[in-house]
Structures are given as structure tokens and as C-alpha cells.
Image (tube, rainbow over all chains, first blue to last red; front, side):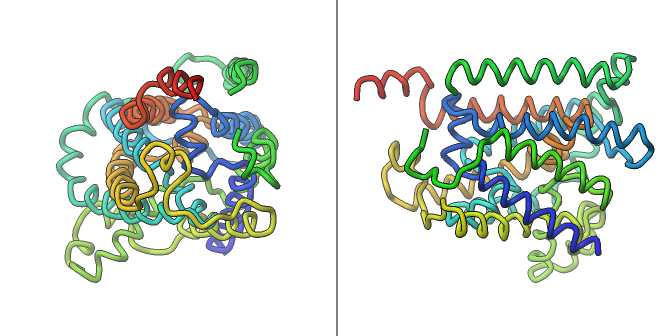
Length: 174
Length: 182
């Protein structure tokens, strides 16, 4: 059943990302070159809805959060490394499959590279665990924890911020 | 912008908001948050089993992320199916080995694009696993949960990406100047 949920969710997500045109190299590089921020519009719209929805259901006791542990070393280094690779590849792990579905077969090279990168990571994980992973460990921290305020205060402030960012993007014609 | 390809396109705000509802529904119904990069570890393990089964059976990371089909694996495969259906039914399907923007800057040769995509994939996935997620796991699911790791990683994704895009294409202002000249 879990597998069927995964497949159906993926099909809908693939459908929506294709419709929004965010699967393409041109859109991803367009965002990284600050020329066409379609993917930022998509991501912020997703987050605006998901943020309120997930915390509402969480307050009602219907869902559990699944917060990834924060650690400055791996989050910052890994984040920057991902970004550098993303700028070369022009697809992210999820959208690379969608790009293939749209006929963009250069994404297949990226998928092959990502499988090699995942294997390389598996072979170096133990060494990283003793080093990078010990730098700046913050554990499963959320912004409401960090600032000691209600999550609805953070959600309200972020909602306002995201809407202002989107308005700025639209005004600049990006 | 790319109007020639945009038949059947939806507003990114509408599609993004619907994908946000999908994310909420997935957490509610299946208890699963959207993510993609762990699947590449499972996929790599499945392939590496053919070459060195002992490595896959002993390496701690493969024991942590076992080479099996799970919710996320099917989610990632589903993205291919959904994108194919949307592109075939609604427009936008195009068989292409070199993206338009790349072709404009570097020409139509497939080799350089293939090598760059492959190397970019290696670096991106190594980084995603180190960071603990990709733009869906950290970016969408992490930031929606207000998780500090999600904000840090997403900032890293965009900073690294903007730096590399500048290295590959030159400065944005340079690009604009070139366009004005044309």
C-alpha cells in the first residue's frame, strides 16, 4: 500500500511540476542566473500551502512532523556542494526523472552521475561521520524552537515575507 | 519567457499551491514527506550489488538506506510517469539531448553537455547526501516544517548554484548586455 501511495503521489507531483515548467534545465539555470524565477514561484507557493496545512493538522494531532537533524558542517558544506553540482547539471534529483519524462534525455547522464555520487557517498560516510558530521550539531531544531515562539507567529511572519518576495519578483518581471 | 514551448503551461503559483496540497495530503494519508535523494542511495546499492555485493552488505550507509523499493523510490519513479503523461497530453514533450540555453551558449555538441551533466550529478548527489536532502526533502518538506536544517541547506543550494551558474555562463549583467546588443 505504501508503494502505491508513493507511486500515485509521484505521478501527481510529476504532472504538476511539468505543468509549471519547472523540470527544465532552462528554468533551473534561469533561476540560478536570476533571469527567470519560475521555480522559486513554484517552491514558495508549495511551501506557503504546506506550511499552514501541516502545522494545522499537527495541532489537531493528525500528523507527525519529520524534522531532519540540523548540523552546520554537513548542512552548509553539503548544501554548497549540491548547489555547485546543480549549476552544472541543471536538474535536481526529483526533477531529473521528470525531465526524462518530458524527453530531455541529457538528464539521463545526470541520473547516472547521481547514482555514482550516491555510491561515492556510501563509501566515504564513515570517515565523514567522524569529522564533518561532528561540526556544529544542533539536532532536530525548528525556527519556533530557536526563537521560543509559537509556530503560528513564525508561519505568519514567513507568509508575509514570502508574499513580499513574490511581489518583488513579479514587479521585476522575473 | 519561452513562449514557443509554453502551450498547456499552468501558472507556477497554481501548480505550486496544488503541489503543496499534495504534500499535506501525503503526510496525512501516508505519513510521508516529499523527498528524492535517498532513493539514489537505494538505487546505487541495487546496482553496486552486481559488482561488489559484500560492499553493499557491509557498508554502514547501505545498511542505513537499504537497497529496497520504498515509498520514496516509487514517488521518484512516479514523477517520470506523471511528467510524461502531462507532457504528452498537454504539450511540452520534446526529445532533446542538449537544452536550448546550453545550445545557445556552447553549441549543439552532445559530448560536452553529457560530461557536464554527469559530473554535475556526481557532485550534486554527494552534496545532497551530506546535507541530508535535496530541494524537495530540505527545500520543500524542510522549510514547510520550519526546520532549521531546511533553511540552511536551501540557502546553500541556491548560493552554490548561483556561483556555478556564473562560472558556466558568466555574470547575469554580462548576459543582459549581450542580449541588448543583439
